[in-house]
Length: 163
Ligand SMILES: CC(C)(COP(=O)(O)OP(=O)(O)OC[C@H]1O[C@@H](n2cnc3c(N)ncnc32)[C@H](O)[C@@H]1OP(=O)(O)O)[C@@H](O)C(=O)NCCC(=O)NCCS
Image (cartoon, rainbow, N blue to C red; front, side, top):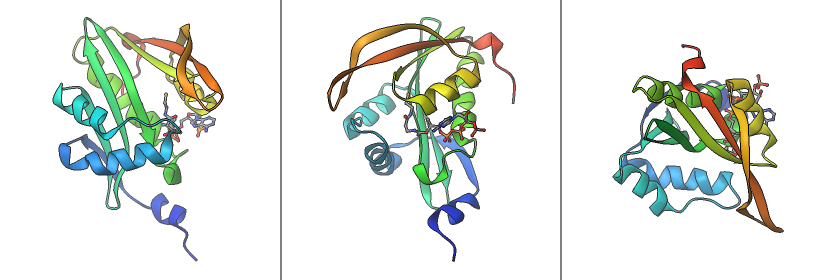
């Protein structure tokens, strides 16, 4: 019998710009993916101020998203998320590369991001993409047992490989 996971595995997906109409699905995915999710209002504000917001679009709806800010020669990956049922198929990597190339092609030199010290999966993805740890912010994140450190990562976008 086909499981939800099998069904997702056969889905075609594409990236497209996030719109206001996506916000309910994006926020639901955010709540399912993070212990301390962004509010709906934060996503709405990201669109309003013109951040580069991309969704993974499938026939079953939005299955991932990324949010990138750009300014003063720097890009910041503010959020990157893929629906749990379709993780480890390379979509997160492609989505990350897609937004990084967008920044590079607009003359941005460096990309930065912060990630929880405990988020080993995401850290593996960032290492694999070429990010290097350049610092940490002690107690930056809320956690269930107090605060958790953020690791700060940087990538020179000139080193990005092309699609
Ligand atoms: C992090 C996240 C976006 C990765 O998405 P994904 O589609 O599963 O990532 P990919 O399939 O493209 O993974 C690419 C590579 O990253 C590494 N990786 C990704 N997830 C991993 C995990 N859970 N454990 C170990 N390595 C992992 C692997 O090297 C993987 O390559 P491989 O599958 O060939 O071994 C996804 O796990 C997610 O949405 N997590 C919840 C939200 C989150 O923590 N976002 C990051 C906030 S900083």
